[in-house]
Length: 246
Ligand SMILES: Nc1nc2c(ncn2[C@@H]2O[C@H](COP(=O)(O)OP(=O)(O)O)[C@@H](O)[C@H]2O)c(=O)[nH]1
Ligand SMILES: [Mg+2]
Image 1 (cartoon, rainbow, N blue to C red):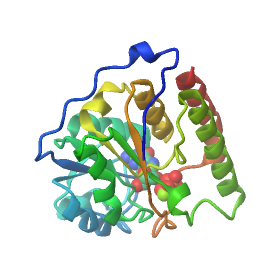
Image 2: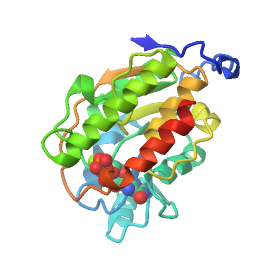
Image 3: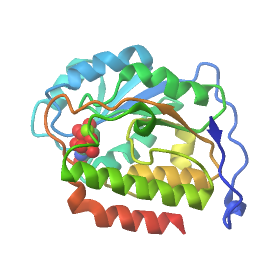
């Protein structure tokens, strides 16, 4: 299902359709990492069949993440430790592929879904394709108070975005997604934190990009610990929402 942005008050800022990608468009799989030595090798091996380049953006890991990734022949670069958002933004200029796929390093996402994320972009049917946990199910969003906060918060944010741009999307927060690199560069994203995901979606809609979703299951983190504390960050999500919504 393809959903286009609306004709809202800022429609004048819409730009012309993006030019078709070359038939041999490369895919850079971007893996942000912070202390992911437990499974980074497995992720790199699993995404390799789907990638022309594997770019690990490391945020000051104090374990062996960078070493292991380099030994697995991924390209490893370092951000300045501000957060996952900074890591993703850095990848826009560093990646060589025309299509970027962002995937977490914690084993939550199924790398086998990469072709389905990339296909609509290759076909010129979408500029941003998000893996939807609402459609694919999540083992990580239900059960504890923090997970409830994440779930309810993300649904409310999704509701606001859907009303604002008159779209009908289901997952504004999943980090597992594919984006054209030229679009990524045009979005002028500023988030340093995990608010980057909703900022990316809102700015893409504002630019008139076509956003698609594919169902994708989210597994529990397979190793290591989560770096994101939503109950400490809720203000950042709200601020990002208001700044980008209006
Ligand atoms: N470069 C970088 N990566 C990060 C940072 N924080 C988290 N990550 C990575 O971003 C991905 C998602 O983080 P995670 O802790 O699993 O967040 P959660 O899934 O929301 O609990 C993982 O691959 C992390 O290693 C950071 O500050 N810098
Ligand atoms: Mg995770």
